[in-house]
Image 1 (cartoon, rainbow, N blue to C red):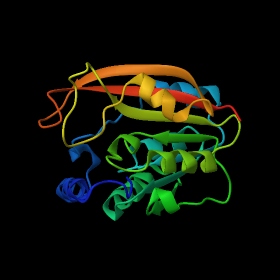
Image 2: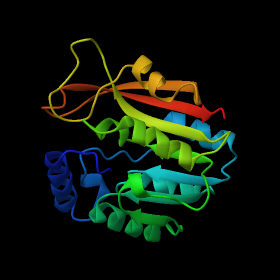
Image 3: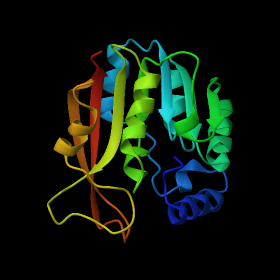
Image 4: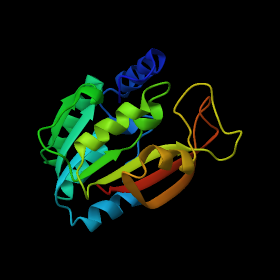
Length: 211
């Protein structure tokens, strides 16, 4: 997660991690299987290259990426999250690099072939989207893939005063184009607790950097 997140949401996230007591499956957003759009991006690369999991959380997808053969780095703002990710990696017998800190100050020595964000951008409520994009461009190179999980809008009335930002596909494309080209979209509606639900639209985007 990231520093542009409001303090109230940070406190809520910390509460979730502490309540989970090291068990990823106890987190309300837990998803054991990777989204189809991520598996497609990884499959096209033949399971090779460097991958960055932005807001890696408990490390479920960081570990999965490593199991596919990628050299994986996971970054999260919360030490509780990276501790869980480290334990999961050890349990699954894979090596991943874990960074506890703010993504806006993260400066790797080399760019990544794949960047995966499963919830950071839409948590940047009131934050600086332009700074996020500048970081993404620093992390990638021509031909790199960017897979984003974001909450979408089911209708014009689909909004909440708190919680992750809902954006239309057009709004998401406007953020990243023309630097990145949209290759694929995956839409899934799912039940969510109030005040976020009762139904949320999850949208997966697969972009590729053009230049």
